[in-house]
Length: 613
Ligand SMILES: Nc1ncnc2c1ncn2[C@@H]1O[C@H](COP(=O)(O)OP(=O)(O)OP(=O)(O)O)[C@@H](O)[C@H]1O
Image (spheres, protein in one colour):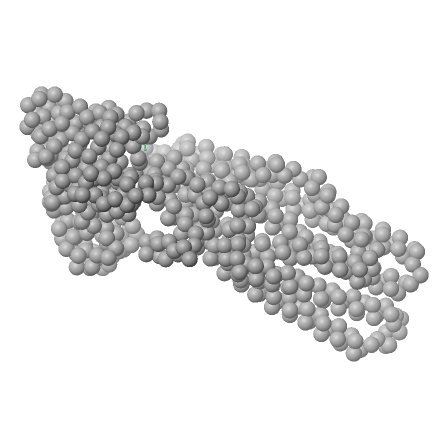
């Protein structure tokens, strides 16, 4: 079996071989997913088939009873009581067998459904972690959340319920064919005709293309609204500060309006479908009753005629109900197939690929060789960047906002790949290293650090999952965060975000540094925080960073130029180019762009100090 490891979870073969996923779409793809747990699903379908057959046994018993009553009528006292008893047992047995098979079918279908769901979620999460960062900017996190929460979940409904219902609905006409020959073929044909006319009428009144389009519009609008709502909630501080409301926040307002415009015609089309079908199936009597009367006029054997007629009047609605299930299941399947297409769209996004080689770097020097990069193939963000960051030394990147500093940093852990040129670590092109190896080599600390809603201990341990509690505590101490952690209600076991465990920006920053210390990767990419809440925090963070940077190859995006006086090399980046480089004093002596930045930095500091005085 093809085992895949994801964060320590061993999973079975993939639910989605991607090559096949590319070929199959819609219902075919949905069936492929349903058959992921093939043995389980096929048994569930077989059980559904048997349970449907059993569900008609009581009708057979009723037919026998009707026949017996009609036979002796009006001398009811002549009824064959023992036969009537047997028919009653037959009816009860039918109900019980139906129930047993149905229960087994539902249970197995649920096992299959949750198996598929589990694998699909694991595959999906594993896949998105391998996608370039740009994908997340393009899609929005709301869309991914919607897919993970709702679209994937909706498949459960199809596998656990609709598929077995479909088997049952396809079995029903077969049984009817048997009944046609077993009871009275004339009534059977009339009932069959009625059903065919009902379905033809349904087909003529429904415009499938239009329904599909309405459904697609609805799904897209729903996702867009999810994205906009997520954005609104994430930016709630800005929304409040600038007195925005849900109405004045155009992105959300427009998305809600678009959703309203899509959901109403979609819901109406669904309701229209139900109403049409219910009416048409009831209209089956319009065929059955006249045919019944016609047969009655030409029959010689009234007793047999009456029992058959009564039987069909009872039997036909049962078939109609099962066929209704088929229509619902088909409509639902079309809906869910649309969801699957959206899931597959994400699954088909190209992952960041390595070259297939598994080279190990010799040392930890970083080299950019003629690197060119653009986010959108239109605007060149990096232009022929070349530099070397020496092993165990600090290389600082400075420059005006928007010059490309963060972009350079983000290419090292392959958040994006360069359009041209190459990046080497220890003499090896990073594309020739396994992604896991590259991640072992590089740690990053950003300005915006994210803590998960789990214990502080686990948040730090995310740096290295096998770190011991002692190692985590030592890292926290080095990152100057042990003092405040120990004062939390449950110390290291306090859940971040829970009551009493709200942390300041500076504290979060230090936990992120502790995380990087635990990871202890030889290369560190650091985006220095621009703002500090207070001098003490700034001092503590600086001390934490000094610990972290010991004996590491550091690439540091520096906003406070005072911190890079001792840097081994400083790169001045403007408009995607390195326009100056050298040591601090060398650059000042040049009296160029860095000199200007330094002057501006000092002037801003004097201004800040005056402001505080
Ligand atoms: N995800 C993105 N998609 C498209 N363009 C982007 C993206 N991120 C950055 N850019 C653009 O790339 C250019 C370089 O941005 P980058 O963030 O690398 O600059 P920076 O020097 O780090 O700026 P700052 O000091 O303000 O953080 C800018 O023009 C920016 O608008």
